[in-house]
Image (cartoon, rainbow, N blue to C red; front, side, top):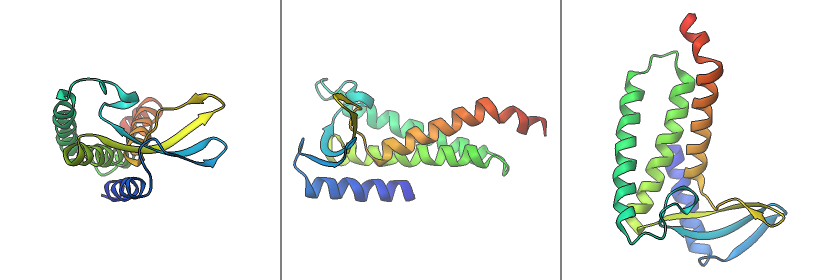
Length: 149
């Protein structure tokens, strides 16, 4: 729930304080830039003619339901998996709220180096990425040890 609340508050602030594509330099490698992303990660399918909104809404809901089922089936000792899934779930819900309410996802965090820019993202995207990284790292390096214990 914390991810959803933080995500929605920061998106609301970005939308209230910035115009689309307006850039505010923060650090030498970090800007705030408001972008309305109708696609998925890296603006995938953003040029489609509108069907992608409903596709991503349905996909997000299906993934969220699957994550809730997975969370309910976890054992008490699977705390890292639960934390990772909670981050992914919070991010998915944060972005689906935007898609339902606006038809796009509000992105505003922009990292760059020299002339190379990472695609603009938001708190929900960050939570999804961190959750996925935790799942991957835990699964590769630690899960088999837990099963043996």
